[in-house]
Length: 150
Image 1 (cartoon, one colour):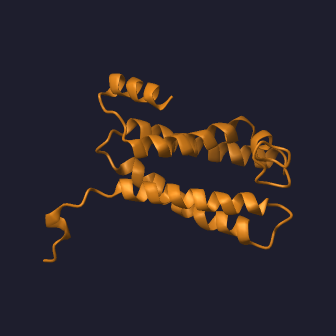
Image 2 (cartoon, one colour):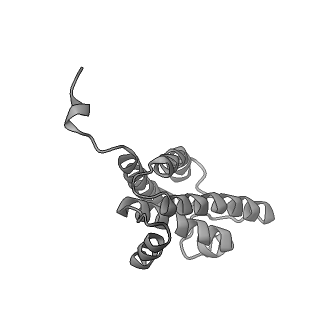
């Protein structure tokens, strides 16, 4: 699947995304598409991966769909930025870092009646790894000259 995306993007833009960009785009894009489609079906109490033990109706659906649009936007930006452009990676890294405390609160906080805490604990680990991937990819390759003290 990623090979097809890579081929399509290279033929359209002549810039193939890096492996890190493709991994982060898949991570954000899959969550974005599923949240936009129907968050209850995928992440609700009886969903495929139940992160939430309660559903909150139309307001939650709208909020999750708005969040999904942002995730899909990050995925699109990562796939179209090109291998040398670090802006999309930095934006993704920053947004993912801002999400981490919320995941920790859901996984380790006192509200075990709303959040499926084991799912959030596992997601916190996965999300931390993906945030690290975004951070390391967003930093330029260190050269010998840049690591010397002045």
